[in-house]
Length: 289
Length: 48
Image 1 (cartoon, rainbow over the protein chains, first blue to last red):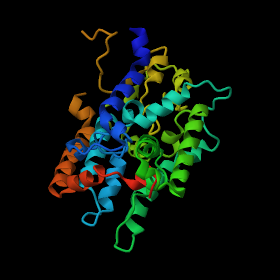
Image 2 (image 1 turned 90 degrees about the horizontal axis):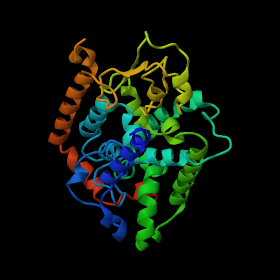
Image 3 (image 1 turned 180 degrees about the vertical axis):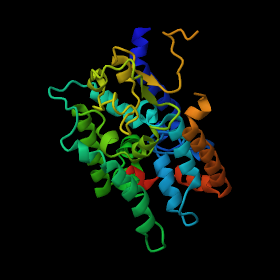
């Protein structure tokens, strides 16, 4: 049972990634799923052009609606942000995002000098908000082509998830797409490669510094149904929670930091059980009778 | 403290989420999302 608990998050990440990307025929044929599942947004950063994707990426969908000719605001996609945010906050990042899973797996590769954070972390962590406002909202709304249509700037110029889960598999299995490769694919592959390599050295660099979806969900951490509190009577301020946190968050001071992806390492590390959930979560090792 | 009082902000947010989702469906935004999602997104895969 202890082993299961230790690997529970990885298991959930794998199962959720497989469930939401289960269109196996897409990988074989070099095509994508075209069914009704694409009407709905999945919680994590999961490109809808991934051959296996059964749902829509919320960031891609947001840009698709605001760059459409009919609507410059999207109630529908913001509704999904509010829904997932109010329920889970950044638990989505820690447990349900396929690109988060990739970074978690890369973090398991041994490296002689792992970093707790990148130099300039205090400033860099705000870059994801700049990307959210700039590349997801302002540029798609304001930089228009000759027919008055914007572009999905984040998807086009930054998103490494789209390159990894959609670009590479589609180009590998679809020869006509290979013929259209150009500088943009090289640029996006370079971003992806840099982030994958960096993920071996520092934990989740994309989530920490670049992800606009994480920036959105982080704002919900203090109010989401799944949120933490510190039991002041039990907490000795020993700092064990911060030492266990791969994102180096002082959990005992800011249990609902917007950076927290709810991996739960701090809860397991606290020797006094002081890191609690505000709303009780059923736990098999405790008796609540 | 009761569940509702403890989670007032989350419950209000959830109510707004349901309202927004319904408004989005009524405005036809689902079709915009669907149209984009069932065609290979050239920008997303790095082909422009």
